[in-house]
Length: 134
Image (cartoon, rainbow, N blue to C red; front, side):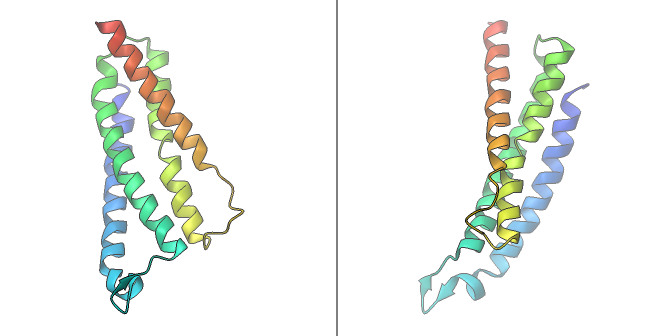
C-alpha cells in the first residue's frame, strides 16, 4: 500500500475526531438545542453539526479511497495526486468547523469550496480508473 496509506490514516484520525465532536454535540444537545420542548438550532451549532456530519462521510470516503487507489492501473503520479485530492476533501468540514469556532460570521472566507472541488476531482479519478479497468 504505497499511496492509500495516507488516506487510511487521514480517514481514521478524522473519524476519531468527528466521533469525539459528535459525542460533544450529543452530550450538550438538551442544554443547547432544546427550549420549552422545541428544537432550537443556532447558527454556530448548525455549523458544528454540519462539520461533524460532512467530516464523518468524507473520512469514510478516504478509507475507501485508500483501499482502492493502489489497485487502479494509473501511473504513480496520478495515484499520488488522487490520494492528495481525497485527503484535501476534508477542507470542507474543516472550513465548516472553523466558521463555527469563529462565531459563524456571514463574511467568513469560503475556503471549503477547495475541499468540495478536491472531492469531485478524486471521485473523477476513481471513475476514470474503473472505466479504464473495464
